[in-house]
Image (cartoon, rainbow, N blue to C red):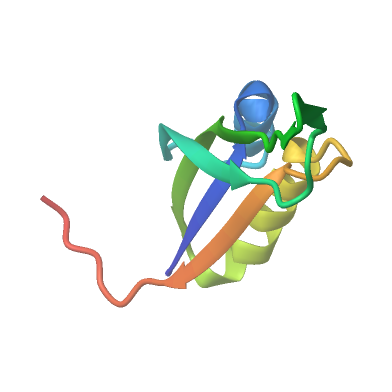
Length: 103
């Protein structure tokens, strides 16, 4: 088993959700998160002081448990649906799952 964690733009959530549904993923967990962004380059000078934009960017995190053989297909589905072609589209992290216990 694999656990896929994807952190995506909140604006792309519905597209990703629909793409996952079409690929057969019926159940996953999601929650809102924020990225802390610290730009090193200056955004300009204001009264002799350089202003740096240090913002929190809202994101949505998804967690999906899939059989190992389905992992690459699910990752590709998320990547295609979440992509805007710009920097900051998100990240996908894949974990090995040693054991699952049903409650």
